[in-house]
Amino acid sequence: DDGKTTFIVVGESINLVGSCIKNSGATEGTINLILADATSIEAYAFEDCSALKSVNLPKATTIGYGAFWTCRNLTSLTFGSVITVVGENSFKDVPNGDCDLTLAAGQLNTGLAPSGNSWAGYTWKSITIK
Image (cartoon, rainbow, N blue to C red; front, side):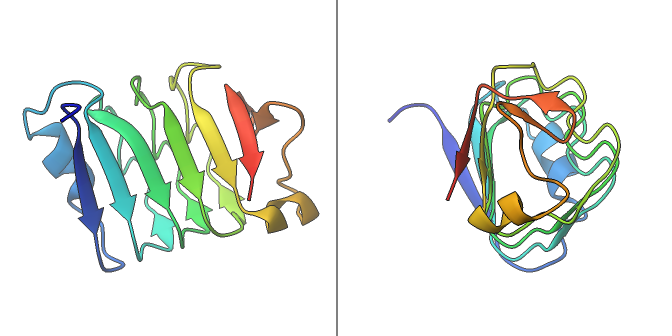
């Protein structure tokens, strides 16, 4: 046991997931979250969720304003679909260079294609295209 907890959330509505994580009392950097069906991440959905270690969003295409603002312990973020909208400050205060990012291969053919280790105005530890 590595002391981590994985939550798999099914269904498109994720309104209260961020609040539940923030109020869970979980240790910082111990939650791996898979949002199996969510296509849109609302503004501030996971703001200040310091317990988040990794997030997998296989179907998300839209990331709202400040969605992951101050997720200081996030080390892995995976998108399985092409992201078409990234709100301003979506990743503000996610430590620059500490988080690995995985993007769908189709992302290279959009106006939101990564450049080096930069994507959506942020620097990532690494960017993998799958």
